Length: 616
Ligand SMILES: Cc1ncc(C[n+]2csc(CCOP(=O)(O)OP(=O)(O)O)c2C)c(N)n1
Image (cartoon, rainbow, N blue to C red; front, side, top):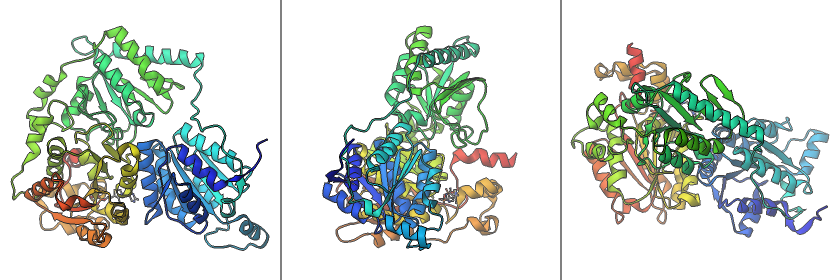
C-alpha cells in the first residue's frame, strides 16, 4: 500500500497531473472553496490561472484550448459557478472535447452539518448530489472527492477517462481536502485505447471489403470508380490529419470536409474540394460531392444537421465511419476504429486501383457545369488566386454584405497578411459565411453541433493560449446577438494582450438565422421589403442596438490597449485590412472590435436554399 506523503497534498497532486498533461493554463472564476487550490497551483508554477469574467467564458476557453492542445481544464466554485459552466461542458460532451471540469465544494464538516441539521451554507442545494448529477449527464467520469486517501485514484480515474474517451470529466473536491496530505503520483497517466483483437481485425477486413464492393457497385458513367471522401470531426479529435493526407495522396481520391472538420488539413491540398454541407454547400462542391462522385466515404464525419445542411439522412451509396463503427450502405460493422480503418483502406484502394488510381480531372467538368470562376468557393484549390482577385476590391461606395466581407477577407488571408491566423466562427450566418474561406491546417475553430451562441468570444482565449497555436492571431466572426451573450470575454483578450480581431456582424441588431428558420419569407421578400422591415421581422428576433465598437474603450487601459471601429462600406473594409497588414499600425497593439454594419435583410448566399424552399 502506498504511504501518504507529507509532501504531497490533494491540490499538489491535481496540479501536478494537469502539468503532466501539458496544460499550461487553467480557466475559471474563483470562490472561497477554490482559493487553496489556486494558491498551490501558483506556488507549483507550471499551470497559469486565467480568471475570466464568467464561468461560461472559462468553459469556452478551456474547450478551445482542448480542441487545440488535446485536453483543457476549467475550475469553478460549487453550485453557482458549476451551473454556469454546465453549458460549456454540455457542448464539450456533444463535440467530443476532453475538458476537465473542477468544482470546488464546501468542506466535509459543512456537509455533516447539512446531513444532521439540514443547515445549508452558501451555494448548497438541498439536493446533496445536484452538481454531481447534472455533470453526470455531460461527462464520461464524475467523482466527488471527500477522502484524501482516495483522491489520487479518483483523480487518475477521471483524467484517464478524459484522455481515453476524449470527452469531459468532472472532479468535485471538498475545500478542506486541498491541503490534506495524499500519496504522490507514481505511474504516468496513459490513454487507454480499446483493445484490438483478432475479431476486430476480421471486422476491419470485412468493412474494407464492403467499402470496395460499394465502390465497385457504383461506377461512374465511364465505368471507372468515382468515390469521394468526406473527412469529419473525428479526423481532428483523433489527430488523424496526416493519415488522411497519406490516404488521399496515395490513392488520389478527392475529398471534402464537414464544416466541423474545416481545415483539419491544409485546404491547399491537391485533392481537397471544399466543405460539403448538403444544400448549403457551394454549387461546385455540391456537384462534385453528389453528382460527379457516385459514392461517398465519410471518415470520422458526424451526420449532424449542420454537416448535412438540414438533410435528414444519408443514402445507401454512403459509407459512414464514426463513433467507433462503420456503416457501408445498409451494412454495419460495430467495432472498427477509425485510426485502423484509414491505413487499411488506403492499402486496399492502392492495391485495387493502383497508386493515385482514384485521381480524376473532374474539375474541368465542374467548370463546365458552373460557369464563372468568380462563383467558385474559396476553398477549391487552383482557384484560390482567381477567387482572391474576385474578392480583392469592391466598389468603394458599396455597402458591405456577408458575402462581400467573406470574399474580401479570403483575399486578405491568402494574399495580403504575413501573419498566421486562427479563424474562430460563431453559430449562425457567421459560421455559414466563413465556411468557404481557404485556410491552412488548424486554422479554423467552431462549435458545430452544440452551437451555443457567443462561444467564439471566449473560445479565442483558449485557442490563443494553447502552445500549438500561440503564434497565430485570432480572427473572430460573431453575430451581434451572439456577441451580446459573451461580450465581456473581450476583457480577457485585453487583459492578456491578445491581438484578436473580432468582427461583430451587426445585421441591424437582429437574430437573422432564427428569423430565417422560422419565417424565411422575411428574406424571400427582401428585394421589396425596404422600409417596412420592422413590421416584417418577428418581434422576438429584434435586439436592443449596441455600439459594439465602443466597448473597446470599456475594456482597455493605458497598458492594455484595445481598439474599436465601425464599418459599413467596402472601402472601409479595404482600409481596415490594409492597416491590419501593417505591423507598425497601433491598431494592431491589442484586441480590435470591428462592428460590421450590414443590412437586416442580408444573408450569406449559402443560405439561399432556405429562402428558395420558402419560395417553392
Ligand atoms: C446560448 C444560446 N441561446 C440561444 C440559442 C438560439 N439561437 C441560435 S442562433 C440565434 C441567433 C443568433 O443571432 P446573431 O448572433 O445575431 O447571428 P445571426 O443569426 O444574425 O447571424 C439564437 C438566439 C443558441 N443557439 N444558443
